[in-house]
Length: 244
Image (cartoon, rainbow, N blue to C red; front, top):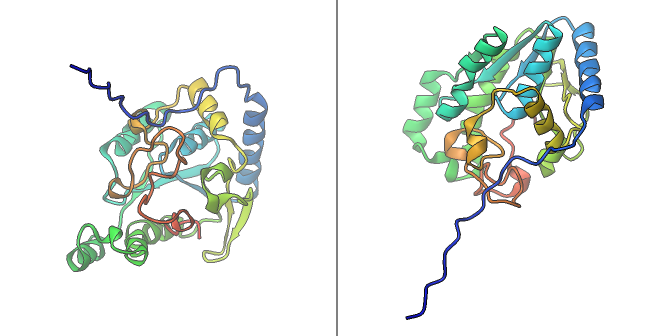
């Protein structure tokens, strides 16, 4: 009898190796960027997705004791692992992250009309869902601010290849900054490990980019890090509109 071949389990994404990577200069540069922003603008707010990049920014802001408000968008569809970071952040930094949720009636009406799987039906419906669960709450979260920060990086997606450090959010009439725009994935993880940051448990399960539960899945080793976000769409449409 011929032995059957042993089926290997697929290898999923794992955080990059950072042994020997010195990010001291990057950390000094980041501190300088954040201090300059906080010094120039009166009301600065960090829109945190609770991803590793946003944890790096939260840690730096807390370490520098900068007067920047940190908030997140609780879409009503986040993984439990993502929400579990909120009490961890409070325990680590004494910081309460404000959570902005979608309007319950509007979200319920969308589900009633289009179904819970509407995002899979078309890009238009998916974007409408993002509008209700992300963009509308973001608008409320940023009301009255002078500037806002994001954890976006150029390496993250084809749609972010030309991402600058500073932008003008013309729709909201305020400045917008991407302090980690030129950081590599390895540099982000080097900071996270050196500072022993609280991180989303889904990273250890092959999720390099984490959004809403219905729109996120793990990716295989070697795949683009955002391949698990809206995986049924083309790469050039994989944005929710928060950074349009």
